[in-house]
Image 1: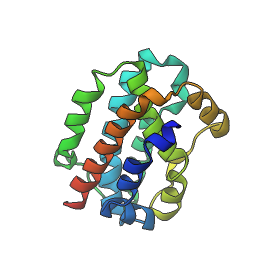
Image 2: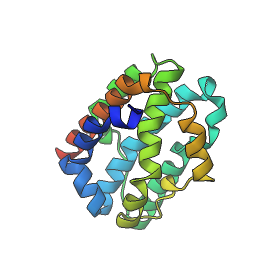
Image 3: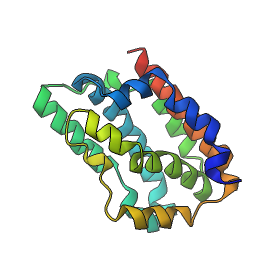
Image 4: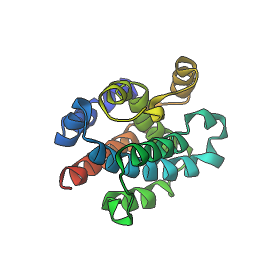
Length: 175
């Protein structure tokens, strides 16, 4: 069984949340900005943790692109970023990620970055702004590179990452 098969059920659970459905259809600028702000914080945490453990994956970095997307929305729609925009799950995510080893970090990269490479293309088309967070250089080679580093024993940690995504979607739905 593949990592994809081993995480299929929780992946579907994440896709079926109310917020994920709205995200796929397209959010109003302010809601999408809130989503991006929390994604920026999550990706900053994950990518900082992966920096020294996975230096061969520098091209996965999304945080700077997410930041650029945030600033674009703020300029275009007069949206202001405030500290109270941070969802509680982001702090829990940080506490979890800083304890992970190489394989644990790879499991999170698999869930988050592959999601951006695939479903992110639909999100980019249907939400405000240019969506540069979903633009990857040489995406096909990057997929091959990451897949070569994955193993089925990462499934438990990948499921945990999906659980964090579901929790974020639930918290965003309550905003």
